[in-house]
Length: 140
Image (cartoon, rainbow, N blue to C red; front, side, top):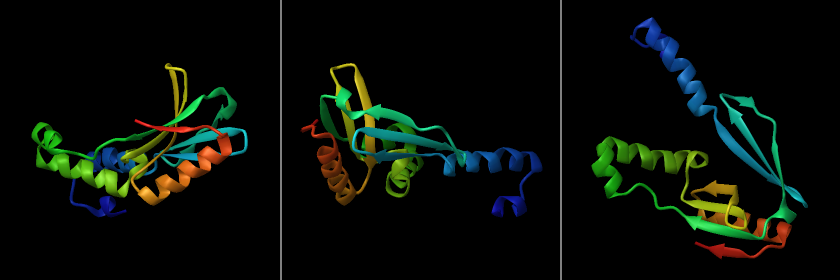
């Protein structure tokens, strides 16, 4: 709404307003049921059909910890890129996040089951996924 009254050219507004809608309105949701994992994307505030993954097809749960933005990224992208990465991790964990929980089958198929930045949410979701699927978790 602020962009409508901002002192910028009208064609910049035509680009920026939809761009903000796509960035702020795009996220992923996960739902676990007794036999399946459902993953649903919302892109620019429009829901996509859910993707269903049968849990009995997978052999294990892998847990990965991906470090937040570091000094190397600050050197490559500058201080603004470093701060932008940190802000995205902190305020928009569905776009990134440091904790990742994956369902894995063999070496070729992986499905992201959850991603976020909160350790409390990570622990709760890992216990829920282990209880629902009956699979063991491996930390990578």
